[in-house]
Length: 309
Image 1 (spheres, rainbow, N blue to C red):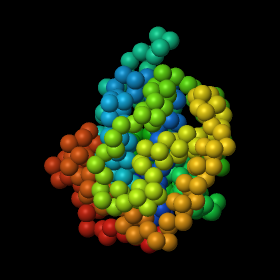
Image 2: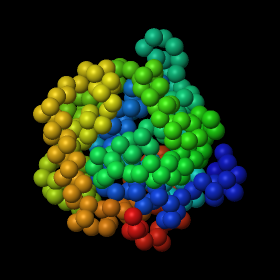
Image 3: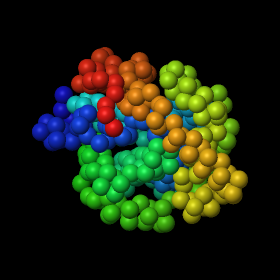
């Protein structure tokens, strides 16, 4: 099925397969450590903050919100042609997300800057998490990942030009957003509180639960440490987050432990995109991004669960 936003041949050029570096690098279980960081980058944008404030239940279900964010990322990355369907449904969902900002102005989730920024944050968080918790990427690898990942935004209706074409340009764009557009607001404070007191974790697949045992820490603590620690220092200061040598040492130790796990981690944890979609099939089908009655994206059900890194 093609997306009504794009012709079929363009969808075919954009969707990713096992030969892509994104498939091989962006579904390591340790990439989860970047999810909270991405959320903080998103909600510090004024429009996203208002939308989450008015239309999200993340405080009541922060772990579920985290999983639904990962659902979206996995669908557009590993869903094949169904990624276009997920993108279409996501855009339709956002049409109804509108309201009034604290200053009385109107907002809409499909404002081009805000809509593109959410997509951009997932890439930025992925690179940061990979460098810290898996291992550094070469400049050539980062640029290839950017060329493969960013066009997926077209499946969501993000326009050409809303996100820079090249990774060096993206760095300038990211720094400008951090410096000029991102702010501390009510939603940022609520997200920070949810990381501090996140409640019980969700039911996770057994391999994921074993990761926490290998790291010898409860899931809430690494999420909090990585969410705050991956932020640029200027944002930690702007958000009023306490950060000192003790917490920095803790994050460094967590990163070193995570990187050291690489050689002994099962392949299914290093490359878990398709298996994640199978595990979450029922929830995805019920949710707004689900591909319909068939559950998991059919185009990728016959792919092996692991790919060479």
